[in-house]
Length: 139
Image 1 (cartoon, rainbow, N blue to C red):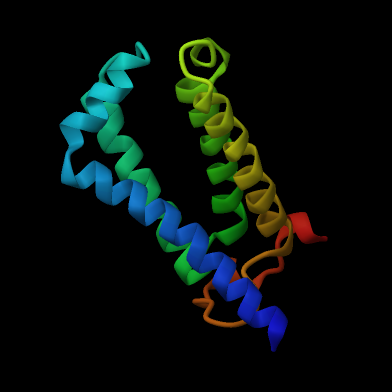
Image 2 (cartoon, one colour):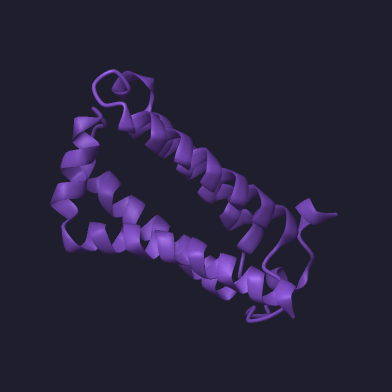
């Protein structure tokens, strides 16, 4: 029972982080686009919308358990991309807190990799052909 509760809490935390991120984007997509532009990416408004819908997909995967392991791996890649692009070494000299933000992304990555390997657990998982199979990573 304790294992099931821990897994469900972890899934809620993962989903919650991405729900918060996408809600900030939906509340002020132009501010997100401005932040993306500040990192010199082209098409910042387009990328902001892509990021918002990607985060929505991740949140749904964590909440339902559908495509859980692939979503956790994609989330890990995304989180490390965000760390490097928005909190990487080029920003440390101007603000030492950026180094802490950078490192925090790797802690999140560790949890996502663990989740990808161990899957969504048995409770509160939408059962589809994909969700019933054990994760290829867990084998």
